[in-house]
Length: 161
Length: 212
Image (cartoon, rainbow over all chains, first blue to last red; front, side):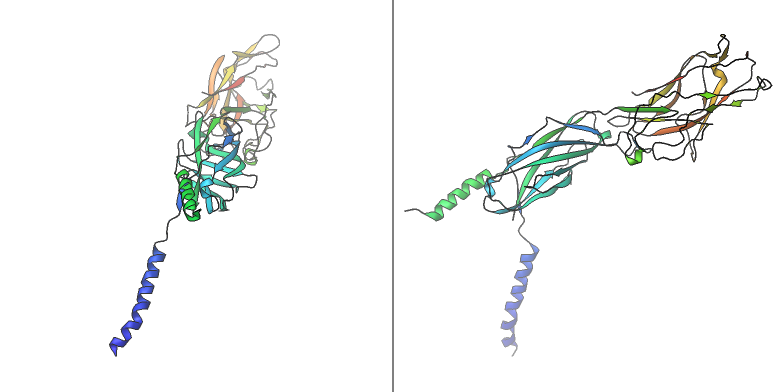
């Protein structure tokens, strides 16, 4: 009697085991930096000014802000006719925490990112070899961290699903 | 005869070759455009609004006065005489708080903004004539005028402390740490311990903010 019961239990056990493995180890999305060599700034540099001309009593309000317009053109040919998620990645970099926010003309999503993070700017099918938009950026940085002009680097990256 | 399956595979290989991470990145240069800003207000000043409401500092050319009028019986009796001002500045442009009281006090405040980590303090100096003078050339030494420093609800050291004028020269009257708002209320008095000739004695003190 016992030997008749065992064959009926075994398939269910193995199926549950296999499912648990599948759910525990989902395939990670592949992330690739996108060729943005066609991107151009409409101004040579970003003029940073005090957000508030006057400081606070505690000296805590030292934010400097600057805006610039950048014509973004990224080469998404490798993902043509597929779907993907495109992020704007602002790596952590000197002189310290930087925040970038932007508005777009509709091809990409508006958003905000703090250095060391990334923000989604597009999700969906890739239907053309190049994706373009004009982004108006506002950069914010603590004025006490800067003394002279400095570079800020960001890039776009694709997550393939 | 075409081999569609193979062709697609070859095209795919070429495209994936192009997708190799080539270290693409875009660089923008952030340049401090107007990092140094200074503001000093002695008496009345100008702001478009309070700081906490986004106010911006402006220029105000008003020259305020402090004065004391003594009766002949009181002249030189050694009792300090309080001086009053024609300044109407009572509220701090930081938040609109009524910080000074008029006509007994003169508001003095300001700031300097600069980029980079904390730097040396900015200095406020007074350029003082040797003496006050009347129409006939009689004089009273400027050192006969002194001031105390306070502010409504204040505690701790004042950025513009109490003092007395020198008899001619440039003297420090306070300092400001970078990127901080500083303010005090000065109450002037005439020492009244000598007997000068009768008359109206005047003199002009110029205050200067010097940022490093």
